[in-house]
Length: 450
Image 1 (cartoon, rainbow, N blue to C red):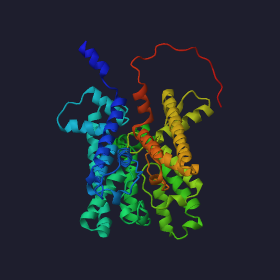
Image 2: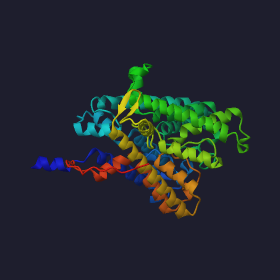
Image 3: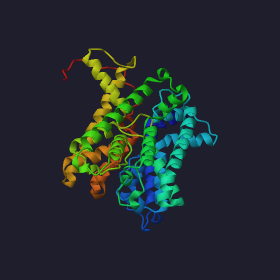
Image 4: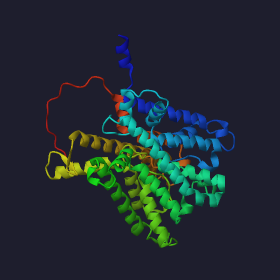
């Protein structure tokens, strides 16, 4: 009897992930409320602490106070730890700690880890965790080393090293938090518009963090033998390349060719176009004032933010594989085929159903959040939709309105950030999970759509 009760009380993987993120956010908020977490020694209000803790853990980058000037060294360290935990994932951190402490990793932990990083199978999950940790350390250290020369030259040795480490972790985890408010509040990386090294390093860190841990594993195992890659890895690499190149071309010719950007050199326009294309889907940094973009440019940003990065990565959003499955399904419908096909592989219908559900959830929540903010703040709908997309896509770029929002609107953004990072379906499964599968079906009847 006791064993049966314990089995019934055992939490599902979805609920473990949900509660894990909630626990980290609340702990982070409590730390940020301490007097010595802020530069003025007064401590942050609960709303500011909760907002920033959520933004950091959900690797978003939206802030209510300038990170560089408002928080103390301790506060910035707390934010950095939350970014690292959020980027790797709470479950990845927990499994890693258990692994290094010598504890046995049971089936429940392996199953939860599989769901957390979107692994196709449970076998080899512990080995994959070790590989992820090694790669994370290697990439973040390499990124910091490359950023150190310009940072040290500008800020001095110790401050430059600290800034390099902070921005390397923030970029790799696709968080978008920066410390450049010492130059101008909320300025992000606008002062480095034409700096080749900083632009290239930050962009590469964002891309590597956003393509997913399983894609890394494919690259490590199969090198340049692309035919041996998992179908998912092929989709991720192709869609990522498309979503990097096409928006960059648009930004260069249609946005930065306008008179308002006449003061930019050709090189600066190239870097600005590439950087905005990279950061739009996931990262939160910006090297230009996004409020100067046309509404068409801002709409493209919104679409890219909603798409996001890859499954099992440090990025958020619907995921590029979701979009790929939806397009493949649409093509199958156009051709009157029963299943979608990608790279010579058949996509199960339940995967297409899952992708359509994710799209619906993100679209409804994004629109509902944006419309609420627009009504609550009495502002035009476009900037409100932009902030909502940035939150639910865990991107973090902003048109500058987040610090001015009311409490209700900030709480809406908190909920959207949490939804975007934990995953809409994870939250739904955690809330609606049933222990008894349905064994009966209703009578079937056709309904006309389209």
